[in-house]
Image (cartoon, rainbow, N blue to C red; front, side, top):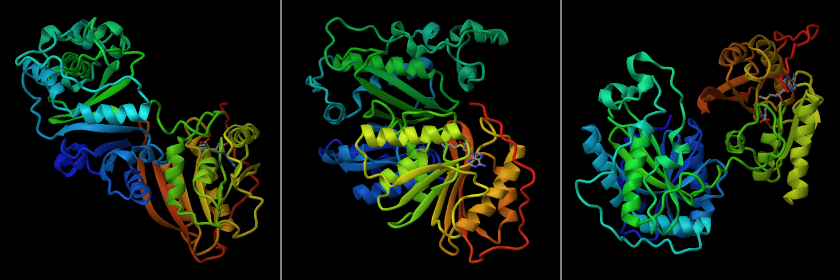
Length: 476
Ligand SMILES: C[S@@+](CC[C@H](N)C(=O)[O-])C[C@H]1O[C@@H](n2cnc3c(N)ncnc32)[C@H](O)[C@@H]1O
């Protein structure tokens, strides 16, 4: 597991040094648990060593390399980091913290940030930073707890640090019945837009962790945003903004970055969606774990919308990717997705095809497959955990039959760890367990298992009875 963000030493990141004009530090977000794979991709494609932290990697690259970073397949969002500090004391009174957050606006390297940002996003006006109004010491933006704190949840750990008079009414006296509107959705809640403001319209998004603070994330965003507005004269726009500035606070660890991806990079490939589609970035990471080489046959026997075969065939040329599913609509969706890539995106070279099959009785010859990469039904949106116990067992036995002994491998994602662990034990003579990784799928904990085919062709003690069909519950 990658270290927590607060363990990072900002001095190890060269791009944060304003004197290194041509080097910038980029933050690339990645599914928690798969940071090392993103690190490997950075090394392989950019020739740089990434600094790993939970849910993200940091890399120093020459500014001319930024477009290449945006082509990485393993990462979700890319931001240029313009300030990072480890010991920013944010545990004092609210007033003091507000002032600090307001003054923080003068610390980031806005020149480098705007240069990289305008290059990437094609901002045509000159965003050059000309400091018009130096920030006045001992100043901050007037707090608006009525707006900023109204979306606070009754479970928020900072409630105990807040003075009574600023706690929103609905959270006083254990009255939790308030409405939970998001502060960021309200145009009025930002600092006032100055008439003469020029430059990119920006918004601040604050991500805060830690229980010691005396302010909420929207308040931090407001103070910092007011400082940026006063310092640079840029207008605030919470909707329809040109630039999104990210303020990250974890106890006393603070960093500021500018978002370079208008939409997450995992939004690619799919045009026909199903109920359980994986992100393209996760598919890439799973395929990478299987280490396919040219000439390999790789299958996803439960392919849903073909997210894994599509990403695999786009990124691993010379590998044949076959997907299959026993649900007709999923097979149709898969074909539509692949047809779209071929016909509308010109990806005519894709070595992939989809068929309808049952993973427990695959129409494949024994040992025809080099690697399996698949995402099993979790038993949440699709199937049930009782079904999973039977399905997982049968699938592992059948996949052992079609996968080459000694060299075959399987990368299997599931949330239903109990069914998986129980069944891996039953088939241990056919599959050897490698590293398993716990990953965070939007708050859901899932595990990626890596299995290696043993040398045993078949195990007569492992039997499968087909007379009780697996009951499937479709919710599509
Ligand atoms: C978790 S979903 C896969 C989602 C897919 N990775 C995607 O991103 O779209 C699991 C799939 O397994 C399929 N499935 C369930 N039982 C199956 C079986 N016996 N044989 C083949 N596919 C099966 C389901 O129809 C479902 O599409």
